[in-house]
Every structure is written in structure tokens, then in C-alpha cells.
Length: 112
Length: 115
Image 1 (cartoon, rainbow over the protein chains, first blue to last red):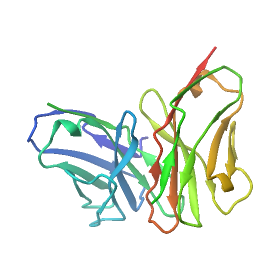
Image 2: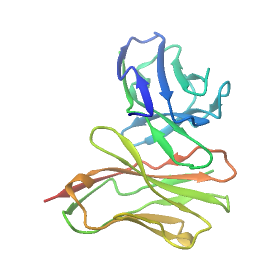
Image 3: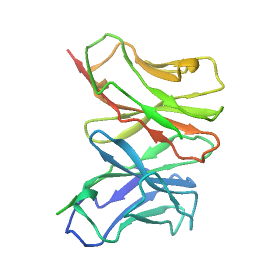
């Protein structure tokens, strides 16, 4: 049973539109992360969270917002989507004790 | 600032042989943690193995082991007796003890194991 799920799995959006990517985890982990994966760049951290109500900027936060309304849910919001945000987005969860991250299946986003 | 570099873009090896994937890192922190993850063709990313900077002994899990060379800031992943299903992209990552819980990833090495 998948512990980190993402929705939608695929998304086509128009330039200037709003996009919300959702992530849910049943690991009861405090920490959650959003990454994007692009060829030649590996996984780059966009935003992360230490718990409900907290969000922190990662390495490439521009153009993205994050929301952590509960322990289980962490959303990534693109208020004004641009073609440069076409990518595969991964959510992950982790706790301070184990220190490893558990990834969701990814969301493929295409911005036209 | 922390940085992780994987210079090998892709590697091809024969099945049942041993392969080493390289990773070098930069950090100012005296305490840090190093990780390797595997991304399969389906896109799934899973944790494989880790090395804590204060441990001298190289970590080993199944047919994965690490070659930790602290003076060279290097953490190589060794896969022995490779199998076709080891074909994947492998990411190296680092977390600094004083920089929160996030990990910074390298760009990945694509491994192809051929029969």
C-alpha cells in the first residue's frame, strides 16, 4: 500500500493558469518535500515543510507556493503557470529519526 | 554551500559484474549524511543505502556497498553481481547536520546492465 501518493499523475495546463499539485502521506512523517526533476538537473528542491502550518523555501522556489494544512497533506501551487515549469514533480516525506526520504510516484506536468 | 556532483552520465555493464558509480560532494559542515537512491524505469524512487560522516566503516546493504573516502569528499556506490533489474538511474544525495532535514541531490547516473 503506497505511503506517499500524488494527484494528479498527469496534468496539462495553459500558460497563466493556476495549477495545484497534491501530495498525501500515511507515514506520519513530520517532514515533506517537493522536488522537480529535469534532464541534466536531477532532483531540485522547491519547497519543504517541517509540519502542519510550516513551509520553507528550497533551492528553486520562484514561481511556486506551498501549503501544509495537515500532517498528511502538502500541496504545491503554481499561481501563474509558465512553460518553463513543465517538468516531473515529486513529493517525498521523511522523519528526523530515519532521515531517509520516501517518494511519491511523481506528477508529470505539461504547461502549454 | 553544499553541492553534490555525479560526473558519470551513463554506464553500461555486463550482467553479473561489479560496477562503481562515483559521487563527490562539497560541504563546510563537519557532520553530514550521504545517501543513494534508485529511480527505476517506471519513475519510482527508492532509498538504497546511507553513510554517516562520522562512521569509518563503509555501509553495506545486500549487494550494495559504499566506498567512503572522506579526505577526497567521495562516496562511491558499488553494486556487485549486477542483475538486469539493477538497470536504473542512481542518485547520490547529502544532508548537512546543521542545515535542516533536506537533502541535496546529484544529477544522477544511468546504469544499464546488459545480458
